Image (cartoon, rainbow, N blue to C red; front, side, top):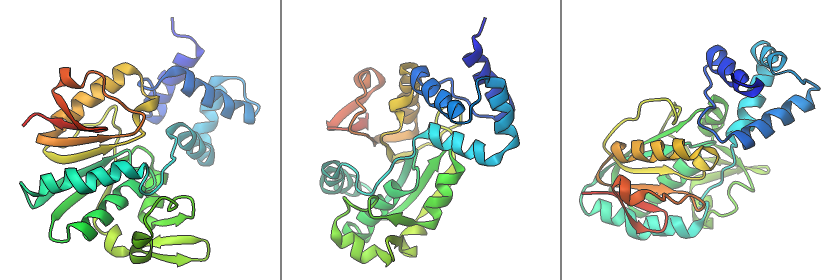
Length: 258
């Protein structure tokens, strides 16, 4: 017999199409209960009714649960490995790259990748897909307007070359924006495209259950072309990497067998 929380998840999936079953229960339950307390709601069914009725509460619900924290050049040392080692090795084999930023949030990650490619590898041809489950964050990504905190780690060269300062915000150049295709996509439930040279999924899966993580890393493996690379976040180690078929080529960079 499902308890009240599990029943809420089932009703949420049926009525709103949002499946949270792959996320760790303690974190999700804590966030949901905190939202309910802020509204003085104690009953899950009453809260679901509110989410169906009021779009602003639904947006806040999705935003709180999807943890949209992002910044340009997050963990700079890892981007430097990508720039100095991973991309040159890829481009020695092909001049056309198929790239995917999975769980792109407000766009800092895919835009960082575009700036690196335009600056360091100007002759490279590439297509870049950026996906997220949250429509609202992707709307922000398409606008391309960021605050000081978002660009704090970004080398000044990139800030000068690819942004226009507007009061206390920074607008990213159209030349960068137009190189990214944004699309809504749920990593836990939707079908993956294939033959990617590089997939970035960083600081996304830390709230997933171990079962969901394992399934996701296998799906990424299938989505990479032979020799393709998965770039993970600094807190995300794939413990069953060898069992799946990955080789660790550098910290946080996992290669599918050739």
